[in-house]
Image (cartoon, rainbow, N blue to C red; front, side, top):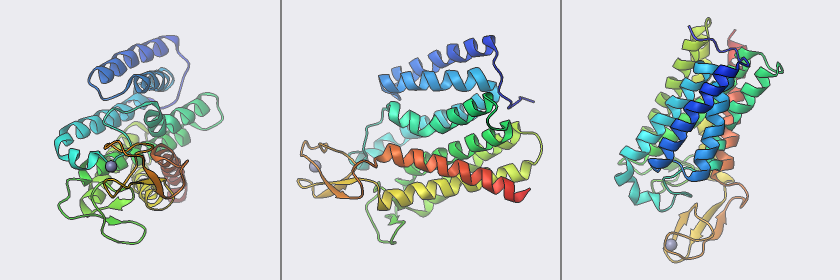
Length: 276
Ligand SMILES: [Zn+2]
């Protein structure tokens, strides 16, 4: 059984950064990550494997691999709505940091002895369950034939709208959270059902918070040329300058992802404490 307790071991750190070079260069060459996204993934992957070992690296790789595969497989279908997502298919450093940053912080805190290893592990799993649930729902939810509703007021909106939810997207997000929860319980010996429950609840509520923020306070823009909402700013894909339509300009999709990941981590830790 792999151990989730972090340790400072030079060989493990070297192996971690070695593998991280391989994965991030491959992801850059496959156009999954931009150049600064690949550098961020190298640092993140190196730290996660280097201090946490294989137990910490596997959930991150499962999230990264599955979301990359999904965004590839649905790419043709996604073209319809992709124009209005904030960024293209290549993930940059801010997206990488928003998805995995909390895990790195939790692992560093556990390594320094500021946080018990099982608590840091649950926080990590809760944040990954959130971003995995959210990414799966975003990639596969757009395949829903029924148009989604806005989580804040229940109004029907076009597919791909920030804050929109669908039955398909919600079911997929539950599966995405449960996969990470299963891995979290697998590597943490004892209290298996409590860990699965806590991490699944963290992921599901974390991704619901992501949708809620997207529907309410996230900065959403409007293209006067195409007459539609978009996350793109300052220029829409058509080249027209977009104007702030709703929400706060500073609160972009990356901040929303990071805040949701923090919320998912806290909910997972709190649910686990209550369930004991
Ligand atoms: Zn436009």
